[in-house]
Image 1: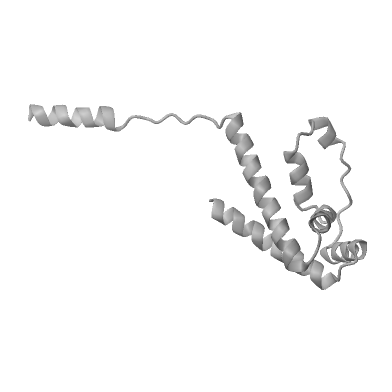
Image 2 (image 1 turned 90 degrees about the vertical axis):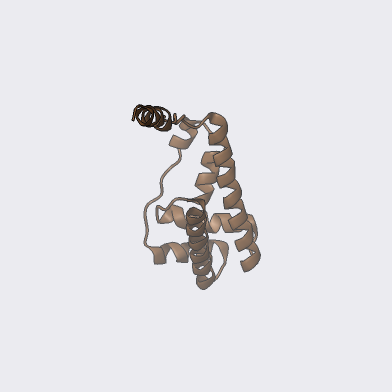
Length: 137
């Protein structure tokens, strides 16, 4: 009986040891940022090939649409990842929020891309972003 008590005591003492959780280091944060940036770049390049649009134009289409509708802009996210000061980020003007239809028409006119194509680009981008988020979890 004494051996059983000692065995159980040892199991409780050594088996229930708490593992310390350390906060992510700056290097880990930077690696996460680079991974996110690479994922965004990959999505943009794939969509550019699919729709036969230049990557810079595609970034503009997605970024302008999301800025007009107050979504999270890919180009804004990429610029936030870049080395910018908080003051530079704070001085960025926030555009007026418009409806989805108005935003798609504005983007279509600005980049001379048919509305249907703009809509397809945006839908594919959202699906890719959602898939990337589910895959990372």
